[in-house]
Length: 375
Image (tube, rainbow, N blue to C red):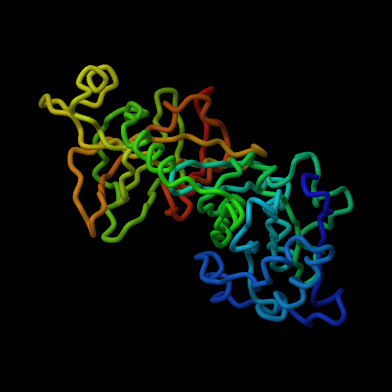
């Protein structure tokens, strides 16, 4: 495995002694965990590099949440000195009843999502380097035979290596996805360190260079939102909406709608003076004027029939940008036919979709696909 640390499971209830006793089965606890309102037990930042540190996190986590929660929690350092560290460890805990956790093959099909918000960059990778490894072996009991106990599965990964994260100063936000489950989101600040030389004029020059960049062309295409697309959120954020089940016919469509309100980076602003570029790249409106901005929203797609997630970056043009507390902010709605995305995983499956931009993320949208195109 990528981290050199084996998958570990802590079993509570009918098996483990010295942790906790029976599962309580709180629906409210499960709801809270699904909406990322719970957090992992805080360890000192230095503990994440210490041998055996995962043992210090397991017992307090079980004691804190008892056996009433189902979902994924992640924990890791809040600050990393680039000059003294070479890895970014992430502790991942998958917990729930035997029956609930057996329905999802964690960590074989889980994915790590890391956002670099200052650049709106996304890095997505499988949780495990070797995707063939699984907790569901030939010895796995049928669901009816599983005990009424609770288990917690632990896995540590090096986020830098797994996602090929650029090792540079800035914030990164990590999250683990397992189909319709999302972990809490962990923000880590990567800092150069007190001994590193910082050249403010160089940083100022590079920032100015980025601000001069033109945004990419709209993708997949400029289109109006469907009537049932969600309303633009009042606060900064992203929301998704999709039919729960879609039957694909020969000429069918597979639509996902969304709405967003997001800050605009300088490189997402359309430069009116670059008329030739704007015209050649679809950044001119039907009336003849240039769009104000073209905002990037990353779509992460997991399929129940695939082991790896796909990532598509939507480029959404807007006619105007407003200033909020001195920062440009844009909003909009969209509907995209997912079948038009290149190499989109189409077939008999259930799809789980999440959207990311800068430091904001949507709740997952789930689509059950019934494929009748060959009938």
